[in-house]
Length: 297
Ligand code: PRT
Ligand code: ZN
Image (cartoon, rainbow, N blue to C red; front, side, top):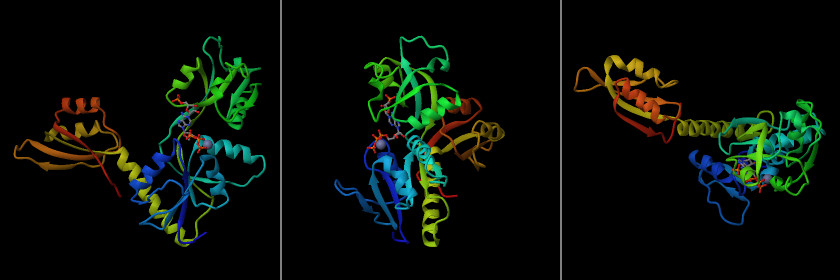
């Protein structure tokens, strides 16, 4: 592998692809993705992208074919448990939780089944694409159930009488509803994460990695933060600031009206309507909330 370029594995198509590409674009990376190739050079950065199935990303990073990968924690921890049986050494490091592709791995049973706590799972056949995470959950709760490993369409297993319950990813809950299933237990929360092989990169790569990581921090922070501008009576500024937890020291500027000031402040969180209504009640007027495109601290 080229020692002066970073190679990143991302999902080729599916739920992680768009958000992974969007993040890299917001970091300033220019890549023209075509239809057939799996390997792309970034036009303005010594970075290459390898587009693969999400199931291959951990292996590509562990085997150091790629320097970085973006993958869901569900796939990552399932494969880690699977591999742990064969090796003791660390497979990866999580560099950053990326916040996108959130979902939960849940145990669900038919809606019409009476269910009295997770002990009711004893003796069940549970269908899942995540047998290792499921077994870990069963062991933790000292439950004695049988796992049926299916690679897809897990939700139809109870209707086909292949299983009594399922353990599957849930996002909106619509799939469960359509299949007359109800959630009875949560196995894990998941989101997309950036991973790398354990240890430190060689010098050139390390500098590139640090640069990209700073941009990723900045891109995520900019997306979460808001720039807020408003007018307020001077004496109300402190109380108003307290309504914006975590905000930085505001810029306060005089206005023509001697008692009033203009305030500009960056809030690290999204600002909801009820916060704006509270700001107004505390004396703020002409309130503007703007998105931030880039941020570098
Ligand atoms: O081809 P490749 O192997 O790369 O893709 P894939 O088919 O294995 O994965 P893909 O693209 O479906 O999902 C990639 C990752 O997105 C997953 O590993 C999760 O980290 C994340 N993710 C987020 C989800 C969901 N939400 C999700 N809802 N992955 C799958 N689902 C499925 C779930 O299995 C169920 O069938 O969607 C259905 C439930 O959705 P709701 O909205 O009806 O609850
Ligand atoms: Zn997959």
